[in-house]
Amino acid sequence: MQIRLGGRADVPLFLAFGDEAVAWMNARGNTQQWGTEPWSGENSTREAGFLERADTGGMRILEDEDGTPLGAMVITEERQPYVPDAEERELYVNFLITSRKHAGRGIGQVLFERAKQEAAERGIDLMRVDCWAGEGGSLVRVYERYGFTRVQEFTVPTRGGEWPGMLLALRLSELDPKD
Image 1 (tube, rainbow, N blue to C red):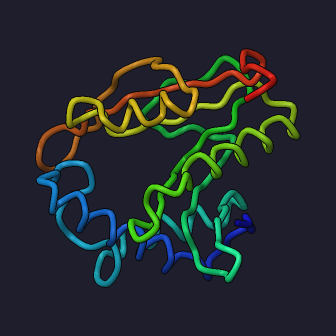
Image 2: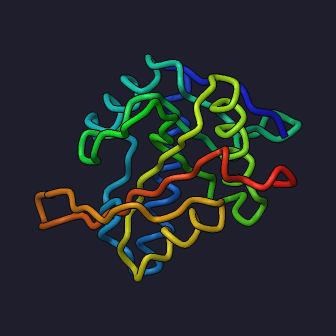
């Protein structure tokens, strides 16, 4: 596997991964996390958001040896607007998604390892990520397996109510060097 920098030309890939995820979540009965509508097509709000993210230089694409995209993330030194400021410089995992076609291959872990490496190279100790906290916190537990710890619950108002979220953090200085 290899990780490359992403850009505006990769926005359709992010949208396609989102389409896969929405279909998979909906098939499991989860219609609240990312809704029921595909991300591609007429959903210009999502596309515009990813175009804006592409301009930050933080897009990373994980590909198989043959160039098949497996997952993607966006890292930035800016937090999401709905979480509190950090008291120090941080690397924020602004977005992470894996192809449902390649689930179970450790793709998320590989992307997080890259984020940790980049944080260390920038001299940043604190990494944060936020995620959907519904469904009994199943996604929160995934991030905990990656080494993150819970910081704070939050909610984001939506058209249909509220989106429950969890802010998590990881300190590079507290990691076991063997990890």
